[in-house]
Amino acid sequence: MQLPSQLRRAIERETARHNLQSLSQAAAELSENYRVQRSAKGTFISSEIRRLAYAAVRLPATFAAARSVFAEIRRLMPDRRISSLLDLGAGPGTAGWAATEAFDELRQITLVERDEERIRMGKSLARAREHAPLENADWVHADLRVAESFPAHDLVVGSYALGEIEQKVSREILKAAWSAARTALVIVEPGTMIGFGLIRMLRDDLIGFGGHLIAPCPHQDDCPIPADDWCHFSQRFERSSLHRRLKTGTLGYEDEKFSYVAASKHPIQPASARVIRHPLRHSGHARILLCAGDGIQTITVTRSDKENWKRVRKIDWGNEWPCGG
Ligand SMILES: C[S@@+](CC[C@H](N)C(=O)[O-])C[C@H]1O[C@@H](n2cnc3c(N)ncnc32)[C@H](O)[C@@H]1O
Image (cartoon, rainbow, N blue to C red; front, side):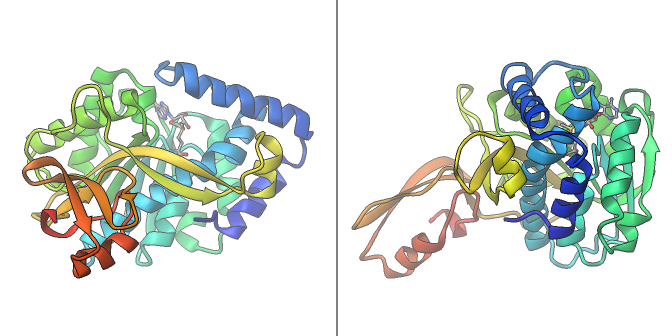
């Protein structure tokens, strides 16, 4: 997956005022903060250079995760029009950009963010996309923790944002977000034990509100993932040359690990089973770990099972597997 070229160039323009070394240092600090203190409640993205470093090295990753989740929502709800989007904790507008790629019919975007500087950056980036709803998006400078309600939109998203807020408060925000969602709501968090812990809890809340899970879960029963494991997915994205210069390593791509839950206001046919790890492919057989209607199971597909063998060659972590094998 690639960042839209207009967004990539706009980020390059924003970062051009700073020398590479200080940006690189800020990117390293940002990664370290995420690695050791991801659960810290508060803003560690406090300086301009850190905001720019976020745009250069984290935004492409969160974009990739949101884009991949939106694609799955579109796949499972092909007939539901998503003409408006509400993004809670929007940062520089990452999920808005991803939504414009997934939902052609999008006409109205509202982005709620508490950091004025990120709003300024988001507006500046949005001017690069010749897409009226993004350019004319409604930016709301507000603290989610004190908002009692949100305006109704077809799709409500919280992407890598609720994890920055105290858990009790994030559940209250979820409740208000669910009331605002006309069609669906999606929460994306880092694909870590902590990120998934929050997703698992919010998943239960959404079921309690009467939500119909769209993805990734193939059922509404208790989540069968063991307590010492976490359900997460991976989206590969191309590193831009700026990204490569700011982060050490020579790979031309990075894999963003994320956890998510998406729920619909209307009954929906979820995936029949979902691949929850990279399939293990061997010469004559493959093993696939699935979350299915009856819990977690490993299926083995052999070369002699021609139909499934063909499927195995195309299937990937995160995809749907038909009817539990
Ligand atoms: C990790 S960034 C994610 C940004 C964006 N959603 C993305 O996916 O790239 C988290 C964002 O949530 C915002 N945020 C955190 N707590 C917030 C709150 N209480 N009210 C509004 N925004 C908040 C932060 O300012 C930050 O921009």
